[in-house]
Length: 165
Image (cartoon, rainbow, N blue to C red; front, side):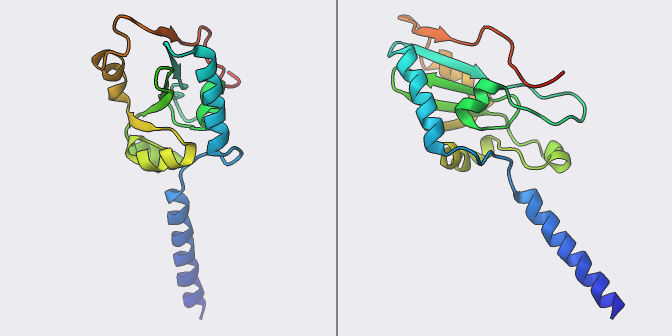
């Protein structure tokens, strides 16, 4: 009987740990409509002949809890390091650029939303496009987005606020 309980406890622990590993970290305080409203306010401020590029926080070396930059989190709710958000005032579209899946990091820290989760990210935060980080420069230069007549480009001037040092 004792062996039965030990085996049962082992399988229950295994099932719960597998379920926990499949859960992606994404905030639950705000709706995708709230994020869309916040981005819409940015579109209203920058106008039709401008783009805004918002950089998320870079990763933290060593084993520390990652914290996204305030402005990036405010507009997306995404807690993925090295992400970018492009807000195109011409067509009022938001494109999120995410790094690709890093299985080694996820094995240690849990699931992180990545470029491979594009459809899930669109559903969670209501952006029009999600792409791999390697497409950011191609979208800015290759598509003519910043070619003459060049739009006004908005970026942040000060370093990101990412928590206590």
